[in-house]
Image 1: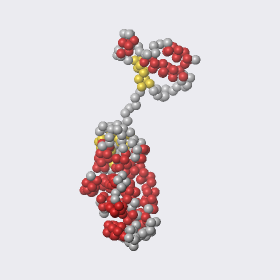
Image 2 (image 1 turned 45 degrees about the vertical axis):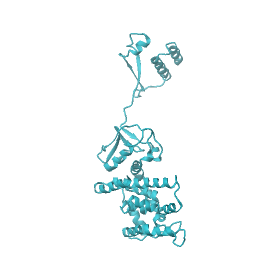
Image 3 (image 1 turned 135 degrees about the vertical axis):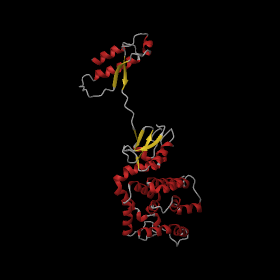
Length: 349
């Protein structure tokens, strides 16, 4: 009944008056909720305040005295001091337009690590944790990824260091043992243990190339861990000694979160935990690792030709994955590895 009376009253007034239309909407809502109990601690979504200096409404109504008008002002929330990336950031889709102008770095509020700032906002991970980098070099590298985003969209697939940092902060601490177990499950089928047969005319050339390029790496593994790797020609892989597996497991357990995140990313890209560990220990450089990973395929391309839009894209994607993980490893190292960091960045560029 009350709602109907209010509507009829306001309909009889000037329908073009913006202020009255706003009051009409608010009054109808107030009448609807009139029978509901109200508490003092319930925040209102609007604030009423008289405006003594607004002449625009006086002119539109032809009224010289508008000091008694009531205006509705919405309460604006305070500006956020942080930016949380959505979970879609980790999937590679475009997450929205660029909303910031300047990217900077600064020491974290607790003095432990470095933060990336988008204007005045502190960058956070998809799970709303502050993105704290272990070194200033890593923070600046991630800031550079954000700086080079285009205005029409933020593209996560152009920010591999940011994704690795989020993985090290969020995924690795919760699933460390599972990551290590998955790496060891694939260890017996490692790329460098697989050897093409030397008694077949179709594969003899591949076998010779593997002996030349991969055997030096296997010799390094034997000197590093004290076990000689077993090579095999079976498609289903072979079985390495338990002592060798335990030595690799011990190495993985001793890594920090950033190192394990990088090793896992390298192993996924290269299909080889040995190549990943060789990069981690400084035995292989980026280009050397990529050559070993693509050894057989590059030989086939040289023999039969390159498929545009296929082989070339695979090579580019592999270079990004291996290079970003290797550079991430270097950037997370502190003072004594500065020379290594510059060397890795030079390879990437």
